[in-house]
Length: 266
Image (cartoon, rainbow, N blue to C red; front, side):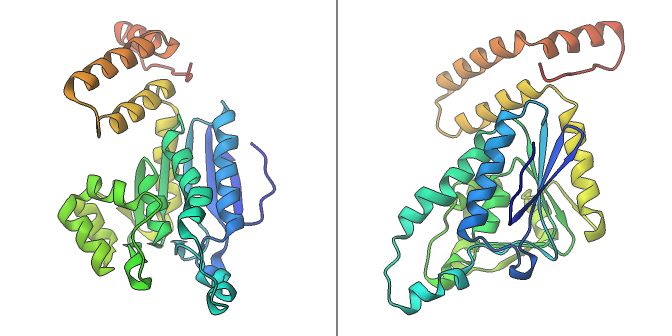
């Protein structure tokens, strides 16, 4: 994919697309443009069959510090009553849904602080690799707000209700080490290795059966609300779909021939 964004760097590493939030002087805080550009980037990736995995990271010393409140300062100082629900419906919510619904794996390379909507952004990704100095903070409570952009959905499912509620109503920071213990991240690596580690994982996933990964993502999210009967049927339908792919045949033949499979994503 090609793009000329102001707040986002887009790079290709073979079948892996690397997206870098690029407002380092603002700790990669969201403004309206960055929200729009990141949403558009995922829209472009969805259309690009050559991309089989995505890495999302931040420039400089932060992953993403959440909403740039300075960007809204004049409105707050002017006494304007912002309709925050509409801002979510028109901005963050479509972005989070695009990440979750993307039929390719998305890895967050959390290189520094992930706060507020930036924490939600990391949680929406399929896997998270964290730098040893990274941290996760649900800072909404500190400005009299509630978790948004999916945090109230993802966090309790990842670390359990009790710890999720504690994070959200105290605003306490979760270190990378604690995030690993709780299962919030897959791996913690030295800061200088974060990009390489995430790329290594992304390349591995990009070489796997892409359609089976997409179907697995859908099944996992469906399981949050399905009954057992409904989930069993969803599995049957997904397995029928996966069974018709070229990658399924390749996997079986490679097993029978005692060789390494060469998956193409088809």
